[in-house]
Image 1 (spheres, rainbow, N blue to C red):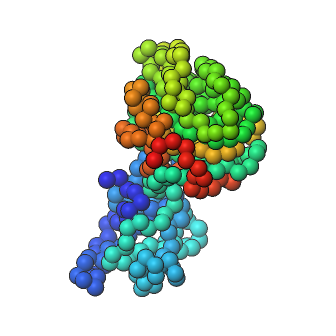
Image 2: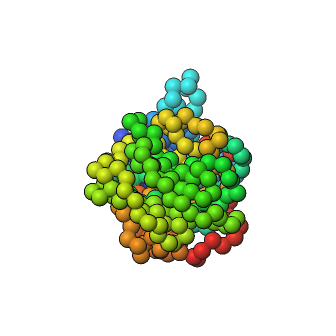
Image 3: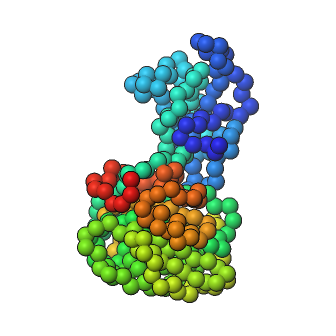
Length: 312
Protein backbone atom coordinates (compact mmCIF):
# COMPACT_ATOMS: atom_id res chain seq x y z
CA UNK A 1 0.00 0.00 0.00
CA UNK A 2 1.28 3.46 -0.84
CA UNK A 3 1.61 5.91 2.06
CA UNK A 4 -1.84 7.19 2.81
CA UNK A 5 -4.16 8.54 5.44
CA UNK A 6 -3.66 5.59 7.76
CA UNK A 7 0.07 5.09 7.30
CA UNK A 8 2.97 6.50 9.29
CA UNK A 9 6.43 6.54 7.75
CA UNK A 10 9.28 5.18 9.94
CA UNK A 11 12.47 7.22 10.06
CA UNK A 12 15.36 5.51 8.24
CA UNK A 13 18.33 3.94 10.00
CA UNK A 14 16.91 4.15 13.50
CA UNK A 15 16.46 1.27 15.87
CA UNK A 16 13.45 0.59 18.03
CA UNK A 17 13.13 2.99 20.93
CA UNK A 18 12.03 0.55 23.61
CA UNK A 19 8.93 -1.42 24.44
CA UNK A 20 5.34 -0.18 24.76
CA UNK A 21 2.96 -0.95 27.58
CA UNK A 22 1.95 -4.27 25.99
CA UNK A 23 5.36 -5.26 24.71
CA UNK A 24 4.98 -3.60 21.31
CA UNK A 25 8.13 -2.20 19.75
CA UNK A 26 8.35 1.56 20.18
CA UNK A 27 9.83 3.04 17.01
CA UNK A 28 10.33 6.68 16.03
CA UNK A 29 8.12 7.89 13.22
CA UNK A 30 8.11 10.78 10.79
CA UNK A 31 4.60 11.98 10.05
CA UNK A 32 3.94 12.72 6.39
CA UNK A 33 3.83 16.46 5.65
CA UNK A 34 3.82 18.74 2.61
CA UNK A 35 5.64 17.43 -0.45
CA UNK A 36 6.24 18.92 -3.85
CA UNK A 37 3.13 19.20 -6.04
CA UNK A 38 4.77 17.22 -8.82
CA UNK A 39 6.48 14.65 -6.60
CA UNK A 40 5.66 10.97 -6.76
CA UNK A 41 4.52 8.71 -3.90
CA UNK A 42 6.70 8.96 -0.79
CA UNK A 43 8.78 5.78 -0.40
CA UNK A 44 8.82 4.05 2.95
CA UNK A 45 11.78 4.94 5.11
CA UNK A 46 12.54 8.22 3.36
CA UNK A 47 12.63 11.46 5.33
CA UNK A 48 10.45 14.14 3.78
CA UNK A 49 12.65 17.02 2.56
CA UNK A 50 10.14 19.84 2.89
CA UNK A 51 7.17 21.00 4.86
CA UNK A 52 5.92 20.97 8.42
CA UNK A 53 5.71 17.71 10.29
CA UNK A 54 2.51 17.27 12.26
CA UNK A 55 2.76 18.30 15.92
CA UNK A 56 1.13 16.06 18.50
CA UNK A 57 0.53 18.34 21.44
CA UNK A 58 -2.06 19.15 24.05
CA UNK A 59 -5.63 18.16 23.25
CA UNK A 60 -4.72 16.64 19.90
CA UNK A 61 -2.10 14.41 21.46
CA UNK A 62 -4.52 13.33 24.16
CA UNK A 63 -7.21 12.55 21.59
CA UNK A 64 -4.80 10.38 19.61
CA UNK A 65 -3.46 8.62 22.69
CA UNK A 66 0.01 10.13 22.39
CA UNK A 67 1.50 11.60 25.56
CA UNK A 68 3.97 14.46 25.83
CA UNK A 69 6.65 11.90 26.68
CA UNK A 70 6.03 10.30 23.28
CA UNK A 71 6.88 13.52 21.45
CA UNK A 72 10.32 14.97 20.98
CA UNK A 73 11.93 17.67 18.93
CA UNK A 74 13.98 16.84 15.86
CA UNK A 75 16.27 19.06 13.85
CA UNK A 76 14.40 20.98 11.18
CA UNK A 77 15.24 19.68 7.67
CA UNK A 78 14.60 23.15 6.28
CA UNK A 79 17.69 24.71 7.82
CA UNK A 80 15.69 27.36 9.67
CA UNK A 81 18.17 28.03 12.43
CA UNK A 82 17.48 24.79 14.28
CA UNK A 83 13.81 25.48 14.85
CA UNK A 84 12.43 22.17 16.05
CA UNK A 85 9.74 20.12 14.47
CA UNK A 86 7.90 17.28 16.15
CA UNK A 87 7.88 13.58 15.53
CA UNK A 88 6.06 10.79 17.30
CA UNK A 89 7.88 8.11 19.21
CA UNK A 90 4.79 6.39 20.55
CA UNK A 91 4.20 2.68 20.82
CA UNK A 92 0.90 2.75 18.95
CA UNK A 93 0.02 5.84 16.94
CA UNK A 94 -3.65 5.36 15.96
CA UNK A 95 -4.69 5.27 12.31
CA UNK A 96 -6.44 8.24 10.75
CA UNK A 97 -3.89 10.78 11.96
CA UNK A 98 -4.67 14.14 10.31
CA UNK A 99 -1.83 15.24 8.05
CA UNK A 100 -1.35 17.72 5.24
CA UNK A 101 -3.79 16.96 2.38
CA UNK A 102 -1.04 16.48 -0.21
CA UNK A 103 0.48 13.65 1.81
CA UNK A 104 -2.47 11.27 1.79
CA UNK A 105 -5.63 10.47 -0.18
CA UNK A 106 -8.87 11.99 1.08
CA UNK A 107 -12.32 10.46 0.60
CA UNK A 108 -14.55 13.30 -0.61
CA UNK A 109 -17.68 11.21 -1.08
CA UNK A 110 -20.74 13.49 -0.90
CA UNK A 111 -18.49 16.53 -0.52
CA UNK A 112 -17.72 19.45 -2.82
CA UNK A 113 -15.09 22.12 -3.35
CA UNK A 114 -16.75 25.52 -2.94
CA UNK A 115 -14.96 28.32 -4.82
CA UNK A 116 -16.47 31.28 -3.01
CA UNK A 117 -15.31 34.38 -4.87
CA UNK A 118 -15.97 35.77 -8.34
CA UNK A 119 -13.54 36.51 -9.88
CA UNK A 120 -11.02 34.52 -7.92
CA UNK A 121 -7.32 33.69 -7.74
CA UNK A 122 -8.04 30.47 -5.79
CA UNK A 123 -7.46 26.96 -7.07
CA UNK A 124 -6.98 23.34 -6.01
CA UNK A 125 -3.83 21.39 -6.87
CA UNK A 126 -4.32 17.68 -7.60
CA UNK A 127 -1.81 14.85 -7.82
CA UNK A 128 -2.46 11.91 -10.14
CA UNK A 129 -0.66 8.56 -10.15
CA UNK A 130 0.81 8.95 -13.61
CA UNK A 131 3.75 6.79 -14.64
CA UNK A 132 3.98 7.25 -18.41
CA UNK A 133 2.76 9.60 -21.16
CA UNK A 134 -0.94 9.33 -22.02
CA UNK A 135 -2.13 7.80 -25.27
CA UNK A 136 -5.72 7.88 -24.02
CA UNK A 137 -7.59 9.57 -21.20
CA UNK A 138 -11.02 10.26 -19.74
CA UNK A 139 -11.80 13.14 -17.40
CA UNK A 140 -15.13 13.47 -15.58
CA UNK A 141 -16.49 15.99 -13.07
CA UNK A 142 -19.62 17.72 -11.79
CA UNK A 143 -20.00 21.50 -11.68
CA UNK A 144 -22.62 23.78 -10.18
CA UNK A 145 -22.37 27.47 -11.01
CA UNK A 146 -24.32 30.48 -12.23
CA UNK A 147 -21.36 31.91 -14.15
CA UNK A 148 -22.04 33.21 -17.66
CA UNK A 149 -18.45 34.31 -18.38
CA UNK A 150 -15.67 31.95 -19.56
CA UNK A 151 -14.25 29.64 -16.89
CA UNK A 152 -11.87 26.72 -16.55
CA UNK A 153 -13.00 23.44 -15.01
CA UNK A 154 -9.95 21.15 -15.30
CA UNK A 155 -6.45 22.23 -16.29
CA UNK A 156 -3.54 19.82 -16.93
CA UNK A 157 -0.33 21.57 -17.98
CA UNK A 158 3.20 20.42 -18.71
CA UNK A 159 6.31 22.53 -19.09
CA UNK A 160 6.09 22.09 -22.85
CA UNK A 161 2.34 22.78 -23.22
CA UNK A 162 0.10 24.77 -20.85
CA UNK A 163 -3.13 23.42 -22.41
CA UNK A 164 -2.06 19.78 -22.52
CA UNK A 165 -5.54 18.83 -21.28
CA UNK A 166 -8.08 21.54 -20.61
CA UNK A 167 -11.82 21.36 -20.04
CA UNK A 168 -13.08 24.88 -20.54
CA UNK A 169 -16.52 26.51 -20.73
CA UNK A 170 -16.39 29.80 -22.72
CA UNK A 171 -20.14 30.40 -22.35
CA UNK A 172 -23.20 28.62 -20.91
CA UNK A 173 -24.00 26.87 -24.21
CA UNK A 174 -20.52 25.61 -25.06
CA UNK A 175 -17.75 23.36 -23.80
CA UNK A 176 -14.23 23.07 -25.21
CA UNK A 177 -11.85 20.15 -24.87
CA UNK A 178 -8.17 20.98 -25.44
CA UNK A 179 -5.47 18.38 -26.12
CA UNK A 180 -1.94 19.58 -26.78
CA UNK A 181 -3.03 23.18 -27.28
CA UNK A 182 -5.73 22.45 -29.88
CA UNK A 183 -9.44 22.19 -29.13
CA UNK A 184 -12.81 21.01 -30.32
CA UNK A 185 -16.13 22.62 -29.36
CA UNK A 186 -19.27 20.90 -28.12
CA UNK A 187 -22.43 23.01 -28.17
CA UNK A 188 -24.94 22.17 -25.47
CA UNK A 189 -28.28 23.49 -24.17
CA UNK A 190 -27.93 26.19 -21.56
CA UNK A 191 -28.26 24.89 -18.04
CA UNK A 192 -31.16 25.69 -15.76
CA UNK A 193 -29.40 26.31 -12.49
CA UNK A 194 -28.62 22.65 -11.85
CA UNK A 195 -25.56 20.42 -11.56
CA UNK A 196 -23.91 19.45 -14.83
CA UNK A 197 -21.93 16.23 -15.15
CA UNK A 198 -19.42 16.11 -18.00
CA UNK A 199 -17.03 13.43 -19.23
CA UNK A 200 -14.52 13.96 -22.03
CA UNK A 201 -12.31 11.26 -23.49
CA UNK A 202 -9.64 11.15 -26.17
CA UNK A 203 -7.57 8.46 -27.90
CA UNK A 204 -4.37 9.09 -29.77
CA UNK A 205 -4.62 6.25 -32.29
CA UNK A 206 -7.76 7.62 -33.95
CA UNK A 207 -7.79 11.18 -32.65
CA UNK A 208 -11.40 10.65 -31.57
CA UNK A 209 -12.69 12.98 -28.84
CA UNK A 210 -15.89 12.06 -27.00
CA UNK A 211 -18.03 14.36 -24.88
CA UNK A 212 -20.82 13.28 -22.54
CA UNK A 213 -23.21 15.65 -20.75
CA UNK A 214 -25.42 14.30 -17.95
CA UNK A 215 -25.00 10.72 -19.13
CA UNK A 216 -25.66 11.40 -22.84
CA UNK A 217 -23.08 11.35 -25.64
CA UNK A 218 -22.55 14.20 -28.09
CA UNK A 219 -21.34 13.66 -31.69
CA UNK A 220 -17.70 12.59 -31.66
CA UNK A 221 -15.02 14.82 -33.17
CA UNK A 222 -11.41 14.55 -34.33
CA UNK A 223 -8.53 16.05 -32.33
CA UNK A 224 -4.73 15.62 -32.35
CA UNK A 225 -4.42 12.18 -33.91
CA UNK A 226 -1.08 10.59 -33.00
CA UNK A 227 -0.37 13.06 -30.19
CA UNK A 228 1.04 12.02 -26.78
CA UNK A 229 0.09 13.82 -23.58
CA UNK A 230 3.08 14.55 -21.34
CA UNK A 231 3.28 12.96 -17.90
CA UNK A 232 5.03 15.55 -15.68
CA UNK A 233 2.02 17.75 -15.11
CA UNK A 234 0.53 20.43 -12.89
CA UNK A 235 -3.17 19.55 -12.48
CA UNK A 236 -5.46 22.32 -11.22
CA UNK A 237 -9.14 22.91 -10.60
CA UNK A 238 -10.56 26.41 -10.82
CA UNK A 239 -7.93 28.16 -12.95
CA UNK A 240 -6.63 27.97 -16.51
CA UNK A 241 -2.84 27.70 -16.67
CA UNK A 242 -1.11 29.95 -19.17
CA UNK A 243 2.22 28.78 -17.77
CA UNK A 244 3.28 25.66 -15.93
CA UNK A 245 1.50 25.89 -12.57
CA UNK A 246 0.54 29.55 -13.00
CA UNK A 247 -0.14 32.40 -15.41
CA UNK A 248 -3.76 32.73 -14.30
CA UNK A 249 -6.40 35.12 -15.62
CA UNK A 250 -8.94 35.65 -12.84
CA UNK A 251 -11.62 36.29 -15.45
CA UNK A 252 -11.23 32.68 -16.56
CA UNK A 253 -11.48 31.41 -12.99
CA UNK A 254 -14.23 29.18 -11.66
CA UNK A 255 -16.76 30.24 -9.04
CA UNK A 256 -19.27 27.77 -7.64
CA UNK A 257 -19.03 24.10 -6.65
CA UNK A 258 -17.03 21.21 -8.12
CA UNK A 259 -17.33 17.52 -7.22
CA UNK A 260 -16.64 13.96 -8.35
CA UNK A 261 -13.46 14.72 -10.29
CA UNK A 262 -11.84 11.71 -11.97
CA UNK A 263 -9.04 11.11 -14.47
CA UNK A 264 -8.37 7.76 -16.16
CA UNK A 265 -5.50 6.86 -18.45
CA UNK A 266 -7.92 4.96 -20.71
CA UNK A 267 -11.04 5.80 -22.67
CA UNK A 268 -14.10 4.65 -20.73
CA UNK A 269 -16.74 2.49 -22.36
CA UNK A 270 -20.27 3.90 -22.82
CA UNK A 271 -21.48 1.84 -19.85
CA UNK A 272 -18.77 3.32 -17.63
CA UNK A 273 -19.57 6.83 -18.86
CA UNK A 274 -23.16 6.32 -17.73
CA UNK A 275 -21.97 4.79 -14.47
CA UNK A 276 -19.90 7.91 -13.77
CA UNK A 277 -23.00 10.06 -14.26
CA UNK A 278 -25.02 7.83 -11.93
CA UNK A 279 -22.24 7.74 -9.30
CA UNK A 280 -22.02 3.96 -9.56
CA UNK A 281 -19.00 1.69 -9.25
CA UNK A 282 -16.10 2.91 -11.40
CA UNK A 283 -12.79 1.31 -12.46
CA UNK A 284 -9.57 2.37 -10.70
CA UNK A 285 -8.46 5.84 -11.77
CA UNK A 286 -5.17 7.72 -11.70
CA UNK A 287 -7.09 10.54 -10.00
CA UNK A 288 -10.22 9.60 -8.02
CA UNK A 289 -12.66 11.63 -5.92
CA UNK A 290 -12.86 8.99 -3.20
CA UNK A 291 -9.07 8.93 -2.75
CA UNK A 292 -8.04 12.42 -3.80
CA UNK A 293 -4.61 13.86 -3.07
CA UNK A 294 -5.02 17.63 -3.17
CA UNK A 295 -3.99 21.01 -1.77
CA UNK A 296 -6.24 24.06 -1.56
CA UNK A 297 -4.71 27.38 -2.58
CA UNK A 298 -6.76 30.42 -1.63
CA UNK A 299 -10.46 30.81 -0.88
CA UNK A 300 -11.77 27.29 -1.46
CA UNK A 301 -13.53 25.22 1.19
CA UNK A 302 -14.62 21.59 1.36
CA UNK A 303 -18.26 21.23 2.38
CA UNK A 304 -20.96 18.54 2.29
CA UNK A 305 -23.09 18.85 -0.80
CA UNK A 306 -26.39 20.59 -0.10
CA UNK A 307 -28.61 18.69 -2.47
CA UNK A 308 -28.71 15.37 -4.22
CA UNK A 309 -27.24 15.41 -7.74
CA UNK A 310 -27.75 11.85 -8.98
CA UNK A 311 -26.81 8.50 -7.61
CA UNK A 312 -26.26 7.46 -3.97
